[in-house]
Image 1 (cartoon, rainbow, N blue to C red):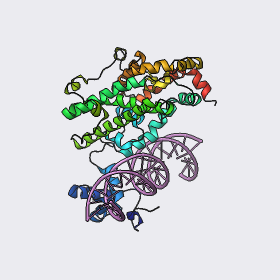
Image 2 (cartoon, helix red, strand yellow):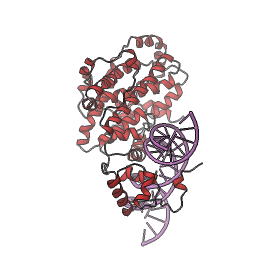
Image 3 (cartoon, chains in turn green, orange, yellow):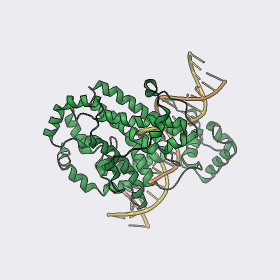
Image 4 (cartoon, chains in turn yellow, blue, purple):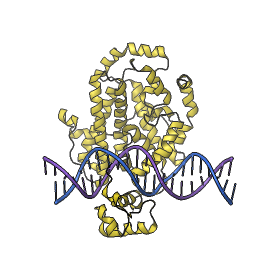
Length: 360
DNA sequence: AAGCTAGACAACCGCGTTCCG
DNA sequence: TCGGAACGCGGTTGTCTAGCT
């Protein structure tokens, strides 16, 4: 393995930085700005490689960085984004002002991942462990016929509206990002995960992958705007090729919530609101068989974009739950802790799965 | 008080991508 | 167009510290 030239040089200091070294970096950056990091050590009088200097600046010395602990809102955002796009730490960090990708990554690895595991939720898939084991048992069989395509279209519509709004009023568009973009990302993540097991449904599979790419593009655009305060270069959307969004679409882009979700009080959320839809598979194997037998009929329903009310409520409930986080944080309870409080309910909801699956 | 352990976080490493001559 | 340098990212390792025995 060829190491970077800077690392081959002898007499380069490694390890923790001293206050004196920090001062040299700060003095250099204040005078010359950032950029050309390979020249920084020589100009600043440091025996470090440029890469190390850049890391020290971006992860610690930058004046816009926060050094206090993560807020519940930030926890929520990390969990949501990780659920949607995985370990894309730089993208996640760009949604959290004052946080670096290293901060987010460390916080995830040391706290959030562990807490989710303690809740019985797989931090990788964001599904309950019991459900994952149950899914393994169901591989080869038909799963609950997805109603996600219709849901996906609905959420993608929100995402497209966001995009249309972006080019007309960027500030307003990004103010609405939480309420519009995130549900779309979560829906696409659901779809992409579903794709793994619904591989034979080739038609929906291609749509799922496109949808996921669209979501990632939107996140990237959001990151670009946050960083540069300008509209990113145009991105060609699939929807552009099919039917360009009309100017009137932006006026109807306000988030919509079902009445069921709106009826919830801010703290009245359930731990399973944060699970992916598969958690609502019938626990009874016999019921699953019935569901499988009806799959072809329901697949036909998907083409007509018929969205069951239960799912609509679920999506709205998830949005509402995330809004509720602000209230829970005001009381000093992190949302993870709040969900931990509901652990008994979780065990009550999945008694069979929890008891049986872990004996495999 | 000394040793051990786990948690937190800073820093490094390797690799892919982008930039530039 | 190509190749090397620079940059950025995600995974991993190292170091410090607090708590426990």
